[in-house]
Image (tube, rainbow, N blue to C red; front, side, top):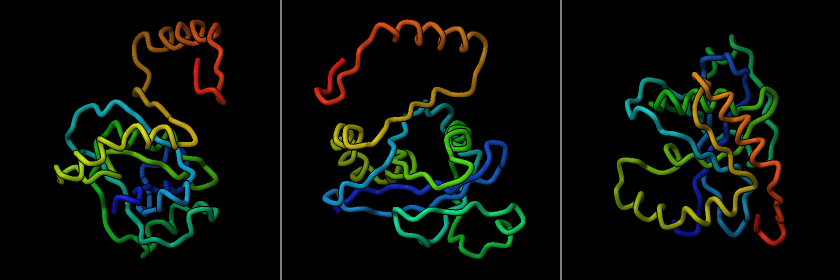
Length: 170
């Protein structure tokens, strides 16, 4: 509905684990849900990776204990497998916590990409989605060529920037 936001709970795991587990759930906007909005370079649109989508098993603020690899394979809580693009899979592996679940807003998952009406409606809400997020995480992709130099240059440039969070200005 218009008064809800679709979010994901990314289950914990190490960066090098192939399996990505998540839950998709709705929260009312009036409840001011705490989430991180993830912005990333979509890369190649082909869905070459996948995420295991679990049935809702926890409350939004409940801690999620990591599951052992053996237990994950035997787990019957999965309701479906969601095909995702490779760059998103890499981003989720790097951004998940090894110890606790993370609540995220990821457009490629939280917006039904095959529903043009929903996509149009959600695009109008993007400003609110990002401004209401606890944090906005930007994933540009894995390091390559001169990316380390580029990030060092950006960090040095940012040293002269003052953030006034209460005033929402730089």
